Image (cartoon, rainbow, N blue to C red; front, top):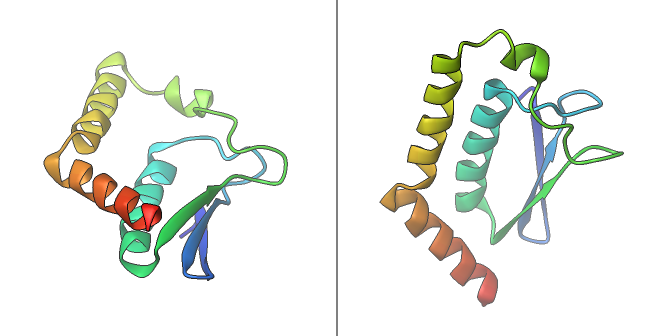
Length: 102
């Protein structure tokens, strides 16, 4: 993955944003992060999400965002909210919380 690195430490998966110095959020980074989290759920008992050396992320890549139409951005946000609000996502979040509580 170009924007995310991962390793296993004491049974927990550490995911680190590795998208340059600023870790600007783009759809590519967010897609990779979603995939990495899904993979980590089956490979570890917990997930530690880390940013870069100086800070976690510099936020949305505005140069990229400004090239998107309002309709494109609205659709992207709506799709992400839809993914987070699925029964599957909620079930996975509850299961992860239960594993961490043990």
